[in-house]
Every structure is written in structure tokens, then in C-alpha cells.
Length: 445
Ligand code: PHE
Ligand code: NA
Image 1 (spheres, rainbow, N blue to C red):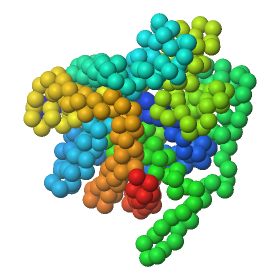
Image 2 (cartoon, helix red, strand yellow):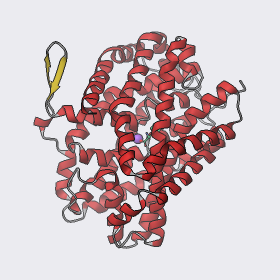
Image 3 (cartoon, rainbow, N blue to C red):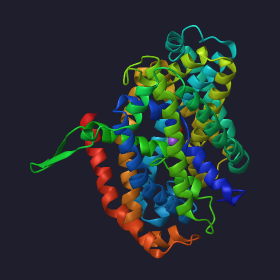
Image 4 (tube, protein in one colour):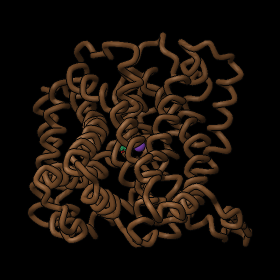
């Protein structure tokens, strides 16, 4: 095993972690799942999950990564026992699974950059989306997106990833912010804000009966699996990504501060995207929940078609979405690549290319027909992600256990109490919440 690369600067890690987190999950999935699964109720559950489950879990992944200095599979072997490497294997497999359709959506974004340049979608965005979101067109752009991802990962950590993510976050915030202000001025946007931001308190209830197994009822049963898994997906958890990135971090850096930064930024970008897209859906008279996977692109494209200088705005906006999607996708491919490079000492560019090719193949059904894409996505949310996060928490909390507290606190000025509180939360309440998510998810599968 050769000398392992590290981040060039202190900010390199947190930038890359934010780059991994902020992506299509915020700009595409978050608004569309929010509008599909209950509006403000979804938002509340999502925010609680991001802070209450997401933060403890991201810290667990950071600890596992930095302590082991290893890829997401070997890390579990090193810190625990051989058998725990299966948690890592599951994570890597899920990364494979998710990247396969993530790349298809990345391809749609590429298509919309072109469509903004030429004005091709301006006449009728909905039917344009219908004609480019599946079949050969989508397949070709899926291939192009995967090619870009491979090219960046082949370049290695410093050159490829650090550089690509530096500009992305500020530009996303500025562009989404400007769009949100513009949407605010449109007639008919009003009810969108209510739907998104003001929860009906009666929907925030969950009843449980024991008979002797627990059974749950109430409005939250339908929201929890999607909203909690949205937090996992959005924070890049349960896929080895944060473990892998943290493995390149030095002991002098505060993991707690970095984790909090990622959670806050990631939620902020999602909310900002929601403030653009959800009122837009109302302006355009699209019923919440009826938009499906294409709702975001269609509603934005419709808006750009009406804007003065809409082509320019469209190109810039979709270019930024592309950068966000790329910086997330590279973190997924990096997980698998790091494992193969660490384990077999293989040539990085060749490994990245071979794995990228396999992921492309797995994505063919999703590119061909959006019904497949939805199926891949649903299985990830309702089964794979909560299962994998559960594995991470069980490992960090109960197998690795107490030494995790020291590792968490190394490089930070926080008292030991914070670390111990984290450990006990992760061991108990957080694990129970993930079990509930998994259970409810399986029920709706
Ligand atoms: N978090 C990314 C997003 O929201 C997706 C992602 C998941 C990236 C897992 C890496 C690992 O778009
Ligand atoms: Na995200």
C-alpha cells in the first residue's frame, strides 16, 4: 500500500464533504419528495432527522474514517472484526446502486444545459422532458455524465475533487437565492409557501400499539421512511462516502465542527431549492404530488421560458446543478475506487474507468424508462439506506464504542461530555429511530 493522499488544505475536507452532500438530493429530490409526501410535515420530519439522526451518524462515519485511515470496507475490519466489513460492503454496494440512477438524472441536467442554450425546451417544457428523459437520448447523456465523473476521480483527490468543489457552494447559494426572490414576486406563489413551511400540527402524530409486535398508525407512518431516508441520502450517509473522505483527514481537525457545517449547509441548500421549486409548482398550477421525478426540471424550465434572459439564466442554473451533481457523484465513485486501489494497489485511473463502466451498465434500465429509476430510488430509500445506516451506528456505538469518543474529540476543544452524550445517543435513541424508519419503510415497500 503506497503513501495515502491527504487533503491539501484544512478547508479541503469540509469543502469536499459539503460537495458530496449538496447535490441532486437537495435540488432535485428534496423539493420533489417534499411536494410528494406531505409538504411542511415532510420538512419538519426531515429537519429533525437531519439534526437528530444525521448529525450523530455523520460523526460516526467521520470517526470510522479518520481513525482507520482506510477505505470504507477495510475501516470496519481494522477497527472491529472481519465480519463487520459487511457493513462496509453494503455501503459500497448501495453507492454503486445509487450512482447508477443518479448519473441518469445528471444526464437530464446535461440535456437541460443544452436545451437552455438552444432554447429547445422553451415552447413546451413538459413534452420536452417526456421526450428526453428516457430511451436513447437519456442513455447517451447518462454515458456522458459517467464519463465526466470517471475523468475527475481518475485525477486523484487533490487535483480532481478539491478543485471541483470550491466554487460550487457559493454559486449554488447565490443562484438559488436570486431565483427564490424572483419566485416570491410571482402571482400565485403564496399558497406554495404555506404548503412548504407551515405544518398542520395534526399531521405530526404517530400512534403505536403492541400486539405483541409494535404496529404504528397515523399520518407520520407514510412520511417518516421518505423524510428520514432523504436526510441519509442528502447527507451522503450509509454509502461509505463520508468514511472515505474522512480517511484523508488529519487528527488536528475538529470533526464535530465539520459535521455540523455539513448538516447545516446541506439543509439550507435544500430549503432554498424548496423555496424556488414549490411555489413555482403552485404558480404553474401543478398539484403537489403529481409532478413525479421530472417535476423539478419541468417547473424550472417553464419558469426560465417566461423569464427575460431566460436562456442565460437557464444555462447558468443548470450548469451549477451539474457541478453539484458531479461533486456528489465523484464521492460515490471515490468510495469504490479507494477500496480497490487500497486493497489491490491497482492503477487509479484504470480502476475508476472500469467501475464507472459497470455503474453505467447498472443504470441502463433507469435511463431507458423512468419507472425503473423510480424503482431503484424507492428501494434505496425504503430498505437499503436505513439498513446501512443502522449497521454504521451499531458498529460505531456498540462495537468500536468508547474509543470513538476520543477520536471524535481529537482536534476539538469540546468537553468529553459532548462526546459521551454523542455515543449514548447513537447507541440508543438514534438506533431506535433508524429501526422505526426501516420498519415503516418495509411496510410501505
Ligand atoms: N448527498 C448527495 C446528494 O444529495 C448524493 C450522494 C449520496 C452523494 C451518497 C454521495 C454519497 O445529491
Ligand atoms: Na444533499
